[in-house]
View 1 (cartoon, helix red, strand yellow):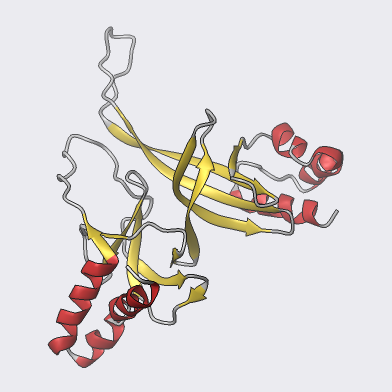
View 2 (view 1 turned 135 degrees about the horizontal axis):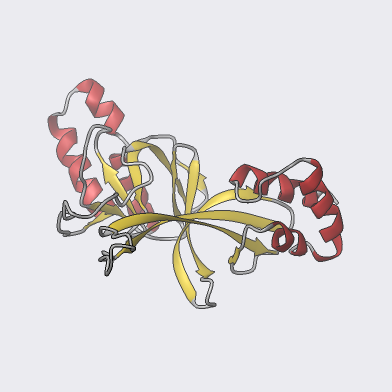
Length: 235
């Protein structure tokens, strides 16, 4: 799809607030068509009730905007992140519970949901394999760009073999990782251990280590990671 055509479709989609205030009329049909062109329909089965947890860190559809080819669009829509499928789901209202409409995945279409910017880019997994998916921009400095990846991982049921073991039902568990891109390179995971985080900065590692200790920072917390990279950027 050509950029100008997609931009028109995006504009129609983010007219939700307008037609909700002025009445549906013919604009509903145009908005629905725009949503179909902007997103992809995904057929999926309902989650079995025996599985604990959900695909989402936040199940609500939140107010969202789009950065399109580097331009922030003024209009707003409603989206949420499916952390199991690594998809952005779109809805016409915040009260919607389910949606099979998925935002196109492109590095040039960047959703901003409740202030968090989801960027669809290549990155490295812990085992070194290349992968492409959404990373959330956490900090953008002079040398380093820091991202966070929130993922839901499915765990199979564990049956207790003896009375000394605990059974576990099938469930979704949280997995949160920090990724860092140095000088524009492909983002790689950064283990949130004090020594590992400090050693990332090489010749400045001692200063960073002292900064972490002096400020009693917990490197497992995203806010602490931001402070550390801000400090290191000014060394």
